[in-house]
Amino acid sequence: MSKYHQVFAWPVRVYFQDTDAGGVVYHASYVNFMERARTEWLRTFGYSNAGLMKELGVVFVVRSMKLDYLKPALLDDMLTVTAQVKEIGRSRITLDQKVQRGDELLTEGEVHLVCVNVETFKPVSVPDVLKKQWD
Amino acid sequence: MSKYHQVFAWPVRVYFQDTDAGGVVYHASYVNFMERARTEWLRTFGYSNAGLMKELGVVFVVRSMKLDYLKPALLDDMLTVTAQVKEIGRSRITLDQKVQRGDELLTEGEVHLVCVNVETFKPVSVPDVLKKQWD
Amino acid sequence: MSKYHQVFAWPVRVYFQDTDAGGVVYHASYVNFMERARTEWLRTFGYSNAGLMKELGVVFVVRSMKLDYLKPALLDDMLTVTAQVKEIGRSRITLDQKVQRGDELLTEGEVHLVCVNVETFKPVSVPDVLKKQWD
Amino acid sequence: MSKYHQVFAWPVRVYFQDTDAGGVVYHASYVNFMERARTEWLRTFGYSNAGLMKELGVVFVVRSMKLDYLKPALLDDMLTVTAQVKEIGRSRITLDQKVQRGDELLTEGEVHLVCVNVETFKPVSVPDVLKKQWD
Image (cartoon, rainbow over all chains, first blue to last red; front, side):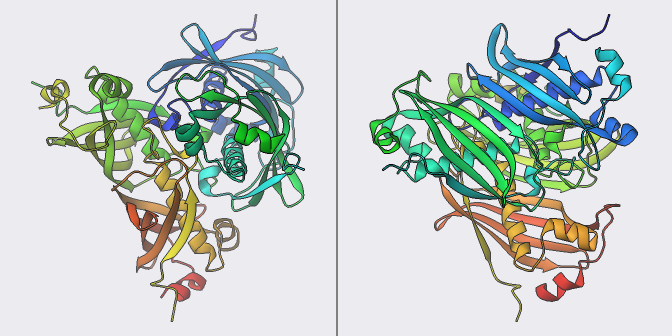
């Protein structure tokens, strides 16, 4: 039994730096929040981004993403940002990510990552040490 | 004949602040670049965001967006960021946005905006002064 | 005995969003890290920024700051960001802030805040509920 | 006669991405604005950051900075950000930087840069091709 279908959740507090003059969280800040949750999710499998780059010569880059903004988050909100594997290919992985305030769903995202060589930025196979934990 | 189908283009230079330790532009920075181009595109119709908020009590917020990252932009690159109307509804507007380096297409985006009341964040009709220029 | 001289410490993990193409943390990101630590320090006295604005009609703004960059922080580093009261005036407060990686001091900051009216941005007295905890 | 004492000025427009829920420009955003002006100032001497790194193996990093926030900049403001050499050493350079809205001085900064080797981050002499233009 793998951690595959599990939803990973990461807490994120909203600071001034994340907001804009509309009085709400700026739309690009959710992209930052999702990167934090993905990175911490990756860490649960024993790998940091720096570690992947140095030890295995690969890095996961965002190939595409889709974001739906349902309700705005506000200054000082305590949010939960999730990451859950949806699909895994040879060099690609699709994650579902949500930003919630308690039970309220604020933003929904689908993020496609590609594992690339850190020098050439060409797609390479997801390292086996990760793949066997995800399959 | 309106400015409807015209492609608006805005130059953006890449600084350290836009890049990350992967040596390329950080994926959320393109979202910032696109906001700049949309704002300058709006300005060609006689309106700033601050003006819309103060004079008409409305603001355009991002309801959803889809981004495809094809090639990475690099430090010191001179980019062209475009905005072009794709579809207009009562309170919604869809824009196609591209980030290019010369003829190379680096990132492609589709951004759905909703015109909302600045107090309630509820959708309202796009102001006529804008709509008649876009139709 | 007050919490006055105590050093408040807040953990901050470094993500790609905080780094630049030089391979290290971007110099403005430390300013963000320090805002997070100050905000959490304020929270220990029972107040959020949103709460101060809504309930008391005031907000703390940065009047000046001085930063010394001694050593660079790196991707995936786990940092400790501190905040410690140095001096308190009628409407001003000076904080010492440090960014450390374990015992290594990476960045040192001195931040002067002013308590201002949220509408006029004019300086006002620090609310008594805070002042009596800080004196 | 060198460009030494000249004030270099660079225009910066304020977008939502630069502001915060206080309704003004976020204090770390001025740090970004100043980096843009410094980079464009460097470009007038024939060098980009990427060029310095690749061709000469050096990069200018911020060693310390001091910022005074006098008046807030607002959404949609058109700002002028300046850079002017104050002092030059073997490997260091001090710049005065200002952020203005027309004649109004909003933020004042003093930025100390060090020229470092791009691999070791150890201080090295400012390249002669730049030094002879600055002296």
